[in-house]
Image (cartoon, rainbow, N blue to C red; front, side):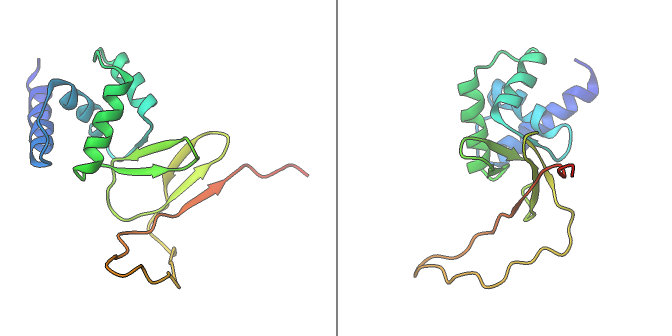
Length: 143
């Protein structure tokens, strides 16, 4: 293992530990795949394919478990786009998304003019944690 790779694994190990998770070999490998390429949106199936291609022997169930553990620990945001399509976002800041229908692609809306007004009052004892906006796109139809 080269020095740069070892340094990245130490940083990922530390990030996982600081989130309150035990840094197992599989969690570290998955976290490395998730966070090494900057902000991204991945489904569990996409991460599973990346893991297998990288030589990480992991089941799809383990990938789902790790993604949900990372989400609960505050390392990821979960985005439910379709009834059965869920993406995990490595950018945990408050932001919104575009979703291209038919292509199953999701990407961040650049910081800008998105505002949400007239939100309902939450029930007693509750507060609004955040508001997720997904703007669905499709290619223009030819006339």
